[in-house]
Length: 205
Image 1: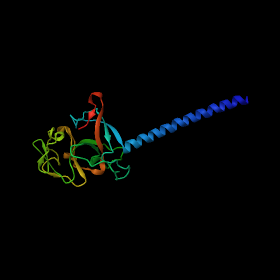
Image 2 (image 1 turned 90 degrees about the horizontal axis):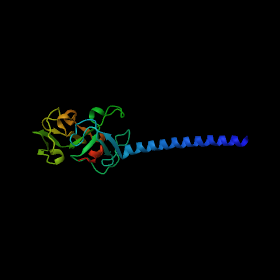
Image 3 (image 1 turned 90 degrees about the vertical axis):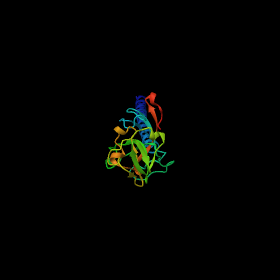
Image 4 (image 1 turned 45 degrees about the vertical axis):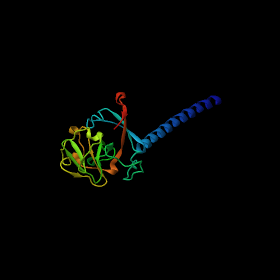
């Protein structure tokens, strides 16, 4: 009887130990995912057609946070990155109309960077002018842009520390022409490549 009781107790201990190991493994895995998403990269699904033809609704993309430096959670500080954002890059960011929402309710946008701090931006005859010169970079020049919205008409000067974004699908894009400028501290990361669906896999340019 004593021997049988010990065996039952042993099984109970082993079951409890296995459950504890499973819980600990799940917690560690969860923390690792949060760490990677915060400081390295994050995946997003494209919800709208504002970046057609570069990105289409349903595309799933990887966004690198290392290029520009990841933001430190709950602060305005950013860890050192490889470099600063460059004109023509496709970037994920928080637009000004979303920054006052709780972080878990904030919507992020994905657009193409057109203007940096100090630049004078003008949209004329479908072209983008920066500091008086038409932009000939193919990733920008391939798209036709419409000069509408409070910040889409005339010459607009981008304030220091801010960025001016446009969607590739200009007629269906809610971008800087309508809401102004995004702050450097609200840049999330650089869109690197499409990983789904299979027929869309490729680098984002």
